[in-house]
View 1 (cartoon, one colour):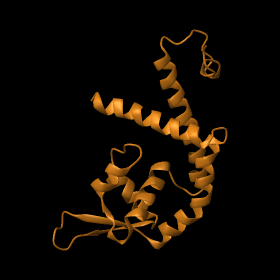
View 2 (spheres, helix red, strand yellow):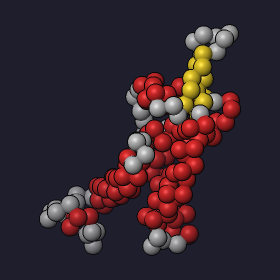
View 3 (cartoon, one colour):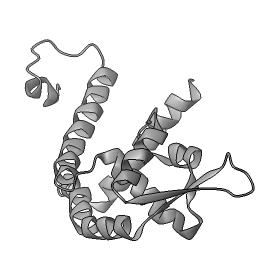
Length: 159
């Protein structure tokens, strides 16, 4: 039985495989969720990736993180983390300091202003995190997480 995505994208021909339909469903769902976050973050002058960096740095605490650590922890790949950090620094949300002993090492920390911004976003983000799953129970959500992890695992094992 064909899914709803055929109608959503205006396709009349059935998909070649269930896998193709599944991939398009994942992509379409991720895009819909992402657009809702884009709308929220735009009102704060942020992008999703900038928000992600601020969250990473809040979690790193006083110790901070270097550029490569931040890049490794991002949810979506970012080719130029340095430029991303430049923009956040200009806004006063992060600060970077070069290590006195190893001048090549730069540690990035979130500022009080950045922490205040994140605190104001905590509740709206939590609401956006929950909304897509209003029609699913906890067991459904746990199964979905497990299935998505298997999909990512198969992608990593094939590269």
